[in-house]
Length: 542
Image (cartoon, rainbow, N blue to C red):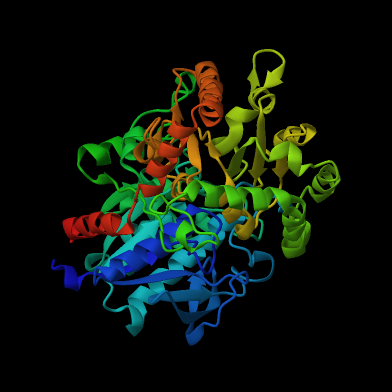
């Protein structure tokens, strides 16, 4: 197919500028814009959560059959960065208690993914109904799905005879952003009025698949009584890809915790078959350099500007001088979402700029979850955790984010030279990238990662685990610091040794440090290049 005939609909749970929780939102927006710059027709479709604040134009409304009843949806249109975005509004699934992007089912004493699996199954059915019945979508020929939230789309397209005509018209891509989240739910269970399982969403399809012995293709391999939408997406699409080349290879291998290796998370056999048949690609994410430009700061700095080190240092000094007011401003903006404000406000009373101004400033902007920060909470030897050992050094550490590991990270706040701020605010996060000297990213696995790219653009050198997208984007002792270990204990020792090496370099080899900063600031991961790879993949299947 000629490039000009491609017409792509990208479907996902997030899109930056409207609904963002993680890096998925960045990929959806930036890839769409980059494809459009290559003269590709592309549009996006996501749920219209109550959490979205935009002036979208109402197009039409229709009814979607889901479970044993019909639900009304409204379809809206919005243009963001010249990209067409369609939004599906539903009072039942994306409003009121379901108005957030994601729902923590545990808060309702429900099972894992119970609410979100149902919500995104409804979204998936809605997307196919729109593609099948409405003029706005008649020219779409490639459906690009992202992560487990869209796995049901590909399941229905492959196995529901209602969409057989549509299936012949469309080619499908499935992008894996994070295998750790798979959205697994039971095929059937006692009905509780909450549509908790696959059978309750699609009663007739379930019976048909069961009778034809086809549930085996979409079942969870760890619990065969469950539906796995991530696996369904992988198996039912025409082609799949990950968001870095190294991660695409890693996930074809089995997890090996004794060797500190996270691989296919139970899906490695499916992924290996795809990889061997050249149906699993690894395409590195890019970074939006217009939105991350130190030249636009005041004062500006960049490797192309003379005495840039002085300007970067000015930002750090200003940030540290105003640290208390900057942190208090987070509370003014997000209120009670600042989850440890009492601890932090009390701690700020003893904060002294003079004590911190000459220390290396180490920052982490992250979801505080096992994947991202778990190794820091683990014991190194008998007495102290790895993060405690780090805080004994001559450093100033700021960890910014929230998540399941928050109680363990609170230990940071018992040290004078460390702050764990259990909150999130994009302006404060951006400041940390700008003013930081070293960016901490000790992920157990990393499909790509965007944080290290942002940090490098601002001369904040990343210290990271040498895996996945981190391996593909960071050059050890050139644009950052990498560590690895043959088992968990060795990984902890290697992380601490690399941490000490980085600190020593900062204090004792300033010329080398500055050269590494210059190299990191000049490194480019362009969406232009990524878009070319996606176009090549689209053409391959059409």
